[in-house]
Length: 418
Image (cartoon, rainbow, N blue to C red; front, side, top):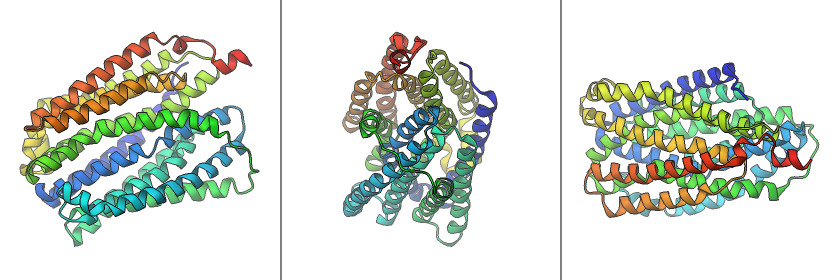
């Protein structure tokens, strides 16, 4: 099975627009706030990323479940699944919100936030993202990627534009993060209105909760491990380093996340595409390798630029106070590439219900947290604590990917038994 080049191109172009707007939002906030206040902003972003990833395994889960039903032409099952999952997720969000906000003050103190409002806004944005993840998962599963593209661009425009306006009046991290929360709220509202209009007369259908749980529980473990991989270092630096140093590290980490923006459109495509191919009885190893190769090729240019001119690029983007962050971007970008490549290979294993990799991810996440807790005297210590466990995870996931016979099978289990 080959990739739809037009669809991939549209996703990459939309992701490029989102990337430019997101980087503009991050850089403008950094230039306005300065390194010390930016430490709060970057830590707030890491809290959003940490919880949004950990609380949103529903996105790939929904995409895969919706893709299965859509392949069978059962839209009533899709609509019923969406309604049922949203109802349960809203209850879970209410419980989690109560816990998070109850502990906001001591957590803000422990992480040296200047104001608790910054952390509270980060919590709010993370929970909104978890809600938005349901409807985006439905969109992905229906292969309506143009809708996804428009929605993500609108979110990025509101986030960047809102920060620009708010920071004209009050120059603090809470103002910059408020625009993040508002953008997520608007993006979710637009998708909710679209589905309410399209499916208002859709009949109810039974939801197979065993099927949902069978895929959701492994995704929770995977996404929680990914959340730790991607964000524990920024929070560790915020906890144990001076504010100005944490701000510089946060700026480098924020730019390194641009590799994630490259990965997102391919990740969005991977779930339903690999699931649909496997449901149709087609091998998916080659398709996974194509997606991985595209990701690595797209990462090469920004990585080489930051290797060649790190201080010059950082000074141009953020200003002279952030020049020291330049050399860190390529090093953190390398970690991101390792992490996302392993995650892409894991998507293929999920598609054939081979969840042996979960133990690898769980052990890797625990190892990274332990390494950061035990040795964090220098930035070099922090970077080593990222590279070692994540490189081992990539190696072991690659071995599992290479040895999984089901990836080369020309018929899924369902196809064989039907």
